[in-house]
Image (cartoon, rainbow, N blue to C red; front, side, top):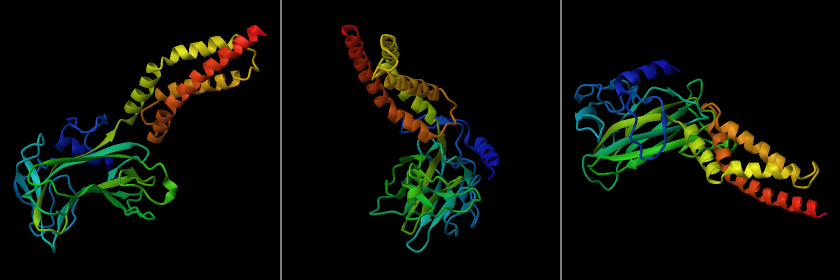
Length: 310
């Protein structure tokens, strides 16, 4: 993989602007797609078998079907790419293979429009997955590629599409959903395709960013702990424990929950590179842990009252 080269090209062409996403997710770093807004090439037809700067290969066709034209998507500059297709011929772009971490989260997006209104279209935006040796992934019941949108048919007005990509939580079942990152993936190649129908498709503002899932999870975890006043609950549990013998029935459970709470908070302050599925597990566990601590508080207080009465 040549991640450093890809990032350098992306920085030079795409700039450092933060994308305006529909989903409220924070991102890390720069756009991993070089020249995703197609501002890096001159207006006019792209010569057969050539591609705009930052792109790697033409997916289909190539007989003058690809062109850089005026009229960008909202906020995406003055140019876009036009792809012509017929029932017998297609065209499109492959990006270079971009190195990714399958334990992290990403978001892929782009703008698409057509040159008119149609009953159907063959305009697709997606990706193909590759392993560490840059071989296309093939898994049981799954192809090596999937899509942000397939057969997009927005008409002549620009339409925005995006997809949040999360690690596959069930790597042993032989398949992965379109919005999941295969466990064995080490890279992906962006596809923008206009596949066998009679019409022109236009792409602009194509993006791929790593999502800062740690920031999302910390907000959820610490927000839930603060809303529950977890520090007050923990103080109450610890104070009540001092009134009970070590072998009191609820005491061991309370100590286990307090230990788990401390670990949860420590992990929530951990480095951002922690796997997304671990963050998600702690997000899911937090409400249950709060409820169990609340219940244990009352169990401890009842035992303390019984101790005093006895």
